[in-house]
Image 1 (tube, helix red, strand yellow):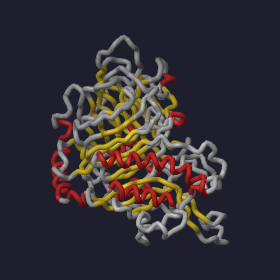
Image 2: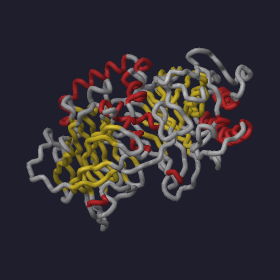
Image 3: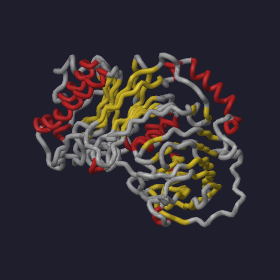
Image 4: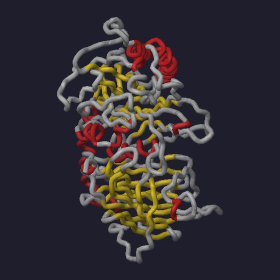
Length: 523
């Protein structure tokens, strides 16, 4: 199969008032309160020499090649009823530019909060805005909201003050999302705050919290790629009530914890939000994985090794999650959640053979070992039995697992439970607490934590950790990078987070509770 597009609706997860609680609750979206979303995973046509400056005319010729693909996909999305379409980060121009070599690609994007402009209707209002005009007309022609990513140039006054954030050349260059209404009006502009080795761009002086409203689904918030790992803007948006996130990305997959679809699902489940995620397709950079995620379902595409290197349009009907749009439904669901949270483990979603209220482990603790996973020193313990209970601690942070390994074929596969609490410092700095059940790449301790994409072993399990953060993102990734929806999720008042899953359809690659200690990032 050339791609995976899985739709999962096993058990709904309601995470009411994001920091407060998780409970497993059967609930259905409001009848009629849904919309059709589309994301496009784009095989970007690259500039082969991004370090060499191009003239404006040459840069436009390059971007028009990608814009022509966008036009085709916008037409396809519209034919399938899409009301909003998201394109990926760097999809028009590519990457690996220097500050000077990207200059021909830059357009100055007006702030929609300060002025109203429809580039398709008023093309002569600003010079050098050909890309904005093309995107605006695309949205207008196909009658849909359109989100794209492009480079923005904004002048800033040169100051003699050494503390001034204005670059020495007197201009800011930003990695930028733009949003066009279905009539072509520019309605939102967001500058990426958390850059990832992007020499062409500046970090904005202050993080921007940007949302836009639609007539079919209410409010959406804007983030870009690496932003998703940080409190600002992502969690700020959620805590301010935004429950639908637009996520253009150029994400390089890294197993076993940060594959694109794995973390996109984790954010959706952990924050109880919809995520519309559009990634680049580039096999050389291990970029693939786009989808439409809600707390109820996931519709996604993830290319497999050997698949043709091509774009993929993903379209799905999804429920409206904006509380102001849904109205009274949120209050009703909150009441249901609070009435069931104290008895969630006895609700029928957990059987007695795999669930235990206290999850205390009376047997001797097996030997532990240290192995690097995602460049961090995890403490691991092997799963040596067909079924049992294990516990592992990294410092004072502990993870517990109850498991039953189902009969499998002749292949031998080793699994280990890992725990890490500390600050990740490679290719970014951020504080973590992670519980992860992983398939080891080989049959020795050093192979635990290495990248693995396939597995045959299926397990019923209950994974639990007591976290020092309210922000924990759960995921279950199976063989050939297929997601499964956890059967049961719960967050207790004392920080204990529990994920239970059984009846797996594929072999387990990773089951993860990924906790972000945002408050420790700068320590």
